[in-house]
Image 1 (cartoon, rainbow, N blue to C red):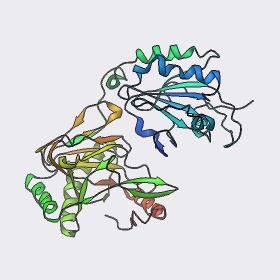
Image 2 (image 1 turned 120 degrees about the vertical axis):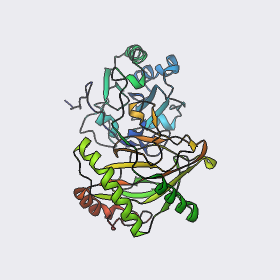
Image 3 (image 1 turned 60 degrees about the horizontal axis):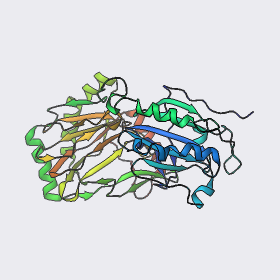
Length: 374
């Protein structure tokens, strides 16, 4: 008998990257922040799969991308070739799981199913909460009638920001007075004097960490501080005012700092950064904590939010910081007035520094070596 993985309510849902009708490499962890329905329908060419997918017509209003999103997971390439997969935004997408990678992770395909071979699919539904933990699993019935049970379950779920039974604060640290106001002015003056360069973000492509520029995902310009004396002064402020708080809250002693940049999100070009995590590639896996220090306050938008913990966003005062684990999904909302200036380093420790050094070999030429340590 084939062996299938079992997932139950309360289990963390596996993350993966898979081709979808939206993207050639959809990073599933970025879908967090709303309830997620994964429908393992197998093939849309047979009656069983068609019965499951009828929920998309019967309950279309459920899938709005704000409260609930739907991902169909199919293993039949003929569905795509025959035009049977119809992505409907907002809310409805499909994973093209032809190697059964996702199906194996969620117990819809045998754990030893060979890519490219005939896959014995066990049709099921998995409902995930906004932090991508399993909320419920529904086995398929021959007539597909369980889809009505799934719909009732989704309609009865609490609001996204109360999915735990009440509103939960994101596990972040907020600190005022990390930088003095005149020091903030000095850093902004450097940016205004020298200007900034459009900055990208890191992606894993064929085992390499590459730098990608996509203004739909991120729009920001950065000035890199080169003055060693200024960098030393910044280190001193972070060591005195940020490191002790991280150690108190997380029992983690940061000893290294990466990146000395003054960043600018500009309303003129819709400066923003869509939901992402800061440590998901080999070239960024060493990062432990992100620090976001506001240098000014004369702007609207540009607030940091943590979708897994609700829609609340944060705008620290001038010189104040939001500090959070690099594993947390976070976003910066579009700046709608003025310019947001911020200092944005990453903190880590000596053990992570060894990991960083080991992973240099995975960096693409577009990234450059991370050999210089703070």
